Image (cartoon, rainbow, N blue to C red; front, side):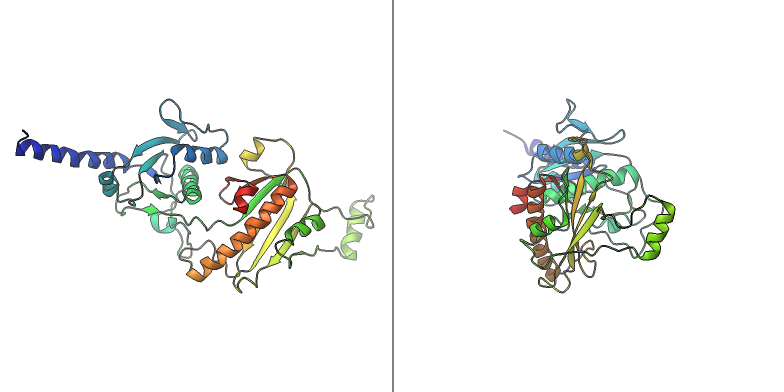
Amino acid sequence: MISRRELRQREQAEQAAPTAAAADLRGFHLLLLDAEVEVSDVLALVHNRLPDVPARLGDNGQVRLSRHSRLSAGVDLDPATAAALEVPEWATHAVVLDCPRDREPAPPPDWFADADGLHEAFPKGLPDREEERQLSLLLSIASRLHLAVRLADEDGLPTRVLVPDPDAKVDLYIYSQYWLEPEVALSVVRRHAPHAFQQALPTPDAAVLAQATLDDPLFDATAPVVLDGYSLLIPLGEIDEGAGEIEIRVIEAEWVPPIIAASTAEPQIEYHVHWMDTEQLRYRPGRPRRFRRMRAEVADLVDRIGAELLSRSDGTGLDENGFLVTSGQLRG
């Protein structure tokens, strides 16, 4: 039979255990996982952004992100530990980021507002250099997987849990070795946006042509223009007066994301499906319900157009966070 004293000691030990676990975690940035997400899902997304980083943990339960930063498998969170860390009840696991603390030397300006709330979480100076890169990675993963990030404790600041808006990033990028002529791309886009049109190209005046001839005696002003890029525009007034427009920018890419460069050395054409709302609210925090409804309609259109361009160009698609997407995912 257990005495009252022994029972009390056992209860105290059980209460101390989650407190000790929470204390060990408080000094690190944590990616909070729910019961539906595995650590392997996180590592797959890390590999999307950093293809040189293996999509698996090492024997030590960690993966090195850079010379100074590493991600570990972390720990399961029982209810008591989750409560001690002041994280959402749905959080069942914490992946741990160990990285330097690099900060900008001055507070963010009054006009600056970050959609993820970084300006409020770091009032004395935003993350910079290595910490900025690794926190950006964590927040992008949290956005893609509908998760959250608990920031490491700091003196004078309360517990800070950032929950990125998973619908805030609307743009798509498609990389392909194939160039779609403007009229071909326009016909593809008009399947979903009949009002789409090609943006007019600037025409050089006589003075510019004369100077070009002087600079280069072999210059032929009558030769056909060879496009190195073009834009297609889609006005969105039918969705909402504040919806603005979608611009599809097509150009030979001077830089490609590492995940694209890792799979091919061929020059790439970049198709950027870019949304520009009228009042430039899309990256600001606290967007009203009407704006979110409008954004959902725009995002659906972007996805449908992106799926068509992806299939037609036989390319590789990335979302605005830099993670791979397929035409099937875009079509839902």
